[in-house]
Image (cartoon, rainbow, N blue to C red; front, side, top):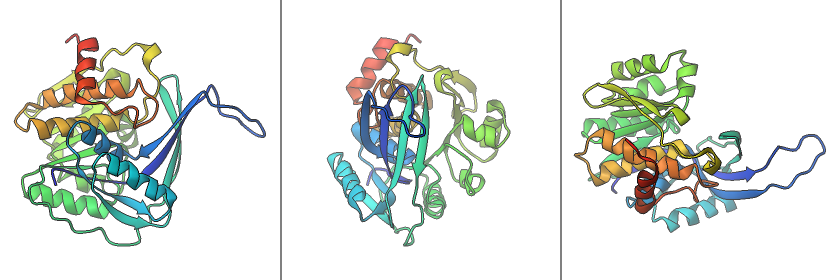
Length: 296
């Protein structure tokens, strides 16, 4: 096992349409995509596409969607440690003008305790806060072992404050700032106070406000992808997280600015493709995004 990702599995149905029908109306979408979904899950697939297939501890139902998900994971050589639920979770996503609307149906009533895994030799842990008991257990275990722990803080959860005490690299969404009534700058101070060695707030087209391993705050601007090339921003943050973990696995001694520069190029690729799977970049795709858009 090279890395471990922990999260909640979704099957994402992404529909490209001018508008959502209401009442008794009908409409035909211009395009669609069906793929794996979930924050850490999508990050795991992105990491795998970039050459470092991690193990994945995630929800798994014994239904046809669950079996379809296992087929997806097998395609990317991702070992799945399933935590049983009754039904698979679904997301319906409608990208609109650089934003996205999401309707989710989730089963996170886990029927069994989380499994205890052999983590010998693992070099990174990535979490999104789902499976709070497993997240706390493995974050504490990895932190004590001196292994990188990473958190995608997409929103406030019951265990967020406690979990951050075991996180090395925390990159959170603006939504978490809003929920905690903090500015982006105040959020960075909060992450520092929880002991996060590196932290940031992802702000979409404005890039990422973050502090590095020396505590220096700066802004990493998003790459200037032309508006007419932006198709689907959903999953861009997840690809960002998976990419910086992949970069860390490839170059564990590199500076975090290098990891994040690599990750933002991966995100730039994702937003130009419909659905999570189509938006997974290869190493070559990331290099091409840097060549096209990185003027820094």
